[in-house]
Image 1 (cartoon, rainbow, N blue to C red):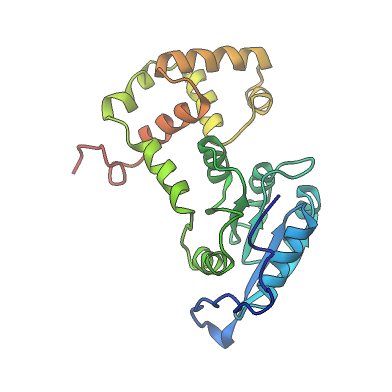
Image 2 (image 1 turned 90 degrees about the vertical axis):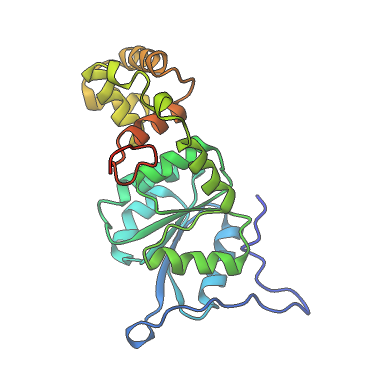
Length: 249
C-alpha cells in the first residue's frame, strides 16, 4: 500500500512546511492517535506528527479491537482511522468508539473513495475523510482543521458527496412517502451504517426479511444501491434551512 505520509524526509529535500496552528492556552499541542495496521504507514505517521510543531502522537494501534480497548484512556483530540483493518473494520470501530469519546474528532485516512464507504464512515461518526496519498503538509493542516471544528475532505471526495445530493426534488422525494413504517426503520438503520445482520438483530427480524424489505425499498425509491437509498433518505430528512431544494423560507 503506497502512501506519501511515510515519506517525510529525503536526502537534499526540504522538510514539509509546517502549517500554522492557532495558538491555544500555553501552546497546547493537538493530541493525535493513529489506528492503522500497516506498520510502515503507521510509523511514518507517528514520525510526521511528532516532528511537526503543535502536534503530538499520544498512541498508535494496529487493530480496531486494540483501539477500542486502549483509546479511551489516551483521550486524543483527533484520531486518524484506517478502514481496511484486520477483524473489525474502521467504520465499525468509529461507530463503537464515538460514544466513548464524544469530544474526539475522528478522521478517516484510507485508500477507499467509493461513495458508499464515505457515507458509512460519516454516518458512523467520522468528521473528516482523506485519502492516504494526501501530502504530509495537507494532512497536518487537515488535523488542525478537524480539531478546530471543521470537516476536511479530499476535494473529489467532497464532490462525490455534493453530487449525491444534487438530485431534482421530485426524484429525492419519489417513493419515500410510500415506505411502510418497518421499511422506514430499515432505511434509518441503513443510513446509520448498520450491516444487514445488525439490522435484523436490532429489529428482531430475520436476515431474509431484511433483504426483502431492502428490495422493496429500492423498488419504491427507484434506486439500485444502498448509497442511492441513503442519499435520498438523508436529503429528505435535512432541515428546510439546510436543504437546497426546499421551498420553505
